[in-house]
Length: 83
Image (cartoon, rainbow, N blue to C red):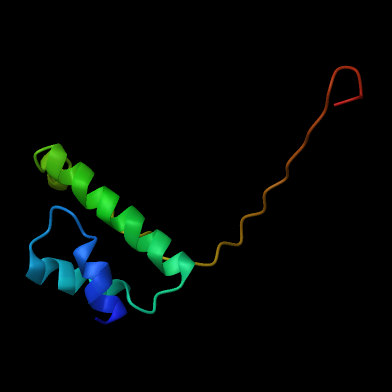
């Protein structure tokens, strides 16, 4: 029995084919990749639990990057001078 097969048996509600597929996907992934995959799956689950309502929300287009010549001055002060 391979480690992939052993892992696939632990994947509770999934059928054998999907369990094997998930086992192949996660095989060899490092911790940050597995955490990202976990968050992705949680997002998909949330989306489906909402009935896909948030899918109708259009994402804004990324702003184009243009170099600005404007300058910004940040001025800070406090009443007591201790802030």
